[in-house]
Length: 386
Length: 231
Image (cartoon, rainbow over all chains, first blue to last red; front, side):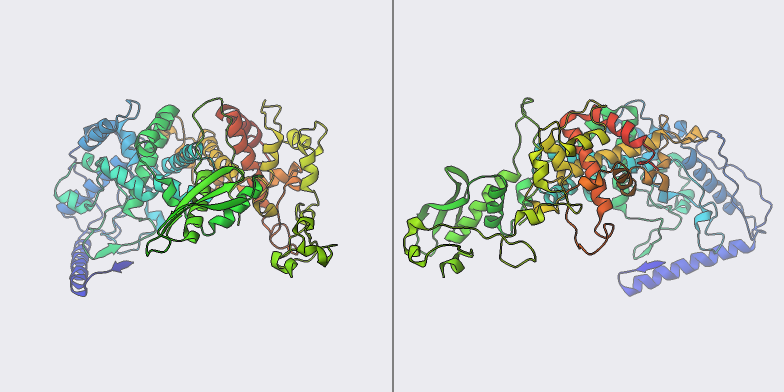
């Protein structure tokens, strides 16, 4: 499916380009021959493993051009490297080594594992070259690539969500659930995680396999980049290919950090916890108070006092200035018996009263326990339902 | 007229007394039966769970060794076996859902959040550790991450399985909750979800009061290795 946007003229020219490239492929197909011999154009050696990639099928065979065979060879080599992620090749990747150093990862966290964290399942290259066969790529056309971050992401997400919720509830045990959810999102939403990963200097692979082949780019270059799309076609302005296997760049970036956390956990639990604290939780200030908005603060406060067996809240005017001027100020305090629960100011008595009640509620919901280990754990009885 | 202003009914008061403020007595009328807008409801009519268990009786039993409610919970969820101490107040909070009594009494929402996230981590951990794979080439430090996301791993400690476990332990009748529609079945009213949330919140309560180690032990041995919970 093609998603078209932008002005109509560039769109038309892009479609024209695609049509031309397609016709070139057809011209090649007519002269392909079934019998062909591989000759290596490898720039980086890959270690032979038990998982050999089956040769790319040539259905309409009969042509044999050296360029096409070179491309096939390059493609196959790339596919095998991505599937096996050999340590020797990964260690040669400058991007991987730099990222490893920058994050201060332990030795057990090999560059091959780091490269696996950068490999999304959607980047799986099809076993059939789509440019040689004019067929719609089906699920069966993809090899069962196992070294990706799919499972790592799920585990990392579970770990990260638990740690974040625990961190927030330890700090503010009485946060109402909607506020808690927003706060959790503010720490670990896809956008936030993606921005962290981008700040590490991770780049995404945007070049198509053909472009990489034409530049004779070694396979280790792509190993250090985030691969979330199989990059068989060129991403051109105005034309974007959308399929189920493809997803947004932001989501892909967020997978990286979750996978890194999961991989660190396999080495040592404490390493993962410290990594989460260092990169995500501690040092990123979130103003919880700004997430609140009370619709009926006085009513809610009255319900809260009733539930907590406190005396009914009473609002009292504490100070005022310029009642008969155009900008009066009233200061109202809300009391439960002798205890003052909150205070607020406003240009009218009503506003000041509502602000005082909101203040009292904020003090209840944003309560922070002391760090004294002798203090009993605070268990939240639940948000007041008005 | 005064009674209208105050929104309360006055019973047994002579009109002549109304002018003398000191002798004024208020008696609140509590309504039971069909709901009437603006009239206070009698707590005994709504502080009761769908199976007829009243909140008041359970509250009176708090701290008593002879309490049927608390002893049943402690026996069925073998808290003693794992050396876990949870007080009665917290246990009652775990067994109270947000829908009950319009949130007047402590309910389990926050405990559920804590417990469910902890259980998710434990379930995924169990899944990656206990998967028999022939091809060990793709493992990371002996753990098979490729099993995550499969239907099998999603089923571990799923809502449905936990609800079944609660039913087999006969604990679902002890939960305080309110039906959305009394004329419909329990499933329509979401009983499985409420039952599983109770088990999640028990885990959350144990986590908050007894620490990670004891909770992990409880979850692994009682829930993950339990065939009823982990089909």
